[in-house]
Image 1 (tube, one colour):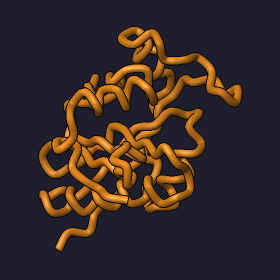
Image 2 (image 1 turned 90 degrees about the vertical axis):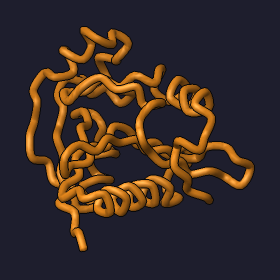
Image 3 (image 1 turned 30 degrees about the vertical axis):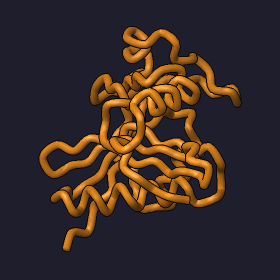
Length: 161
């Protein structure tokens, strides 16, 4: 597995990854509307050059916001490696915190991030309804039957040297 900055990939490859996994490269959350194919990030590549995982983020002032994290193959350490790479990059670029937004139904993400030191610091009730006004394709119910309504803000303090 090789981790590289996403800007080294062909943009159409990154766009297609987001179309396949999210329906489009557009992500809508409380903090804004993002085209993930244009954001900074890292990709985990298999030996054949195919994307096994991808993380995107923005850095503003001294804060890094993770916009997306996908691992094509679960439980192989891909998401963890991408997250660690991003945390290191953010700390090297002067960030003191790293944050992200996820929805109330995303129990896998909530478990994943909390195990890695992220803390839920805020809940945005009914935020997904506002996001659907911009991106109507956001489902109303998750694949396991949970109504998708709220967003959670998770934050981790970075240790800078």
